[in-house]
Image (cartoon, rainbow, N blue to C red; front, side, top):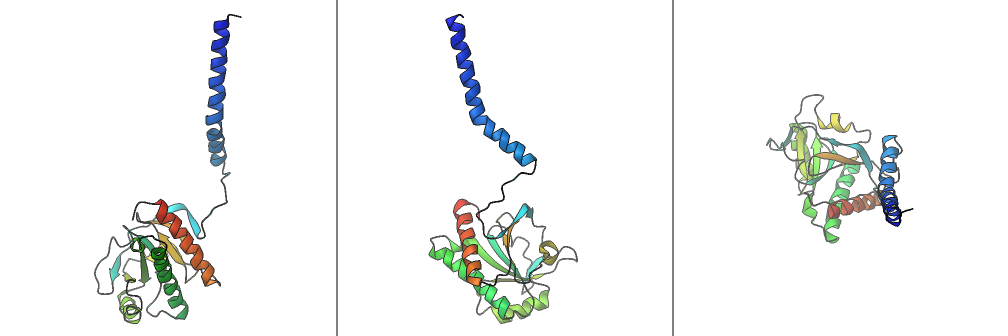
Length: 205
């Protein structure tokens, strides 16, 4: 065999092997993903919403009646659904959100990137909730849902747990759900860990 031809053949074989080495795993991963064989191991504590759901435009108003069409964009939002009266369990969950936000600041993360939002069914409930909660939860956004039936927060989140927390990203996407836990400390640690990862990795909000 011509030495030059043999050398060229070896070079081509090397290129083919390199291509298989780098492209092969990508093709294999794509085939597995396309056939539904996706990895189930995740490092997040909350229940991931798959696929991520962009929230519809909720018609939210402040307790004073001011429209807040962009409240759930521009910041990371921790949302809790409630009513006119916040009982002890509801209050504990609001405190958990507040403490988690403070813990972000203690960890060196700008806590103002996270806002706490309490959505109640109507203007009357918002006025009553504000009277009950404003003194103890000064940074909490207490808002009324004034949307039409079928287009309200409860229609979007479909809560199976009245104490669930919903994490919304700054683009208005619903990312995770945190359901009630008997161990509140475990819930707070898990929520804090998720938020620290997300806020460190993300430049938005």
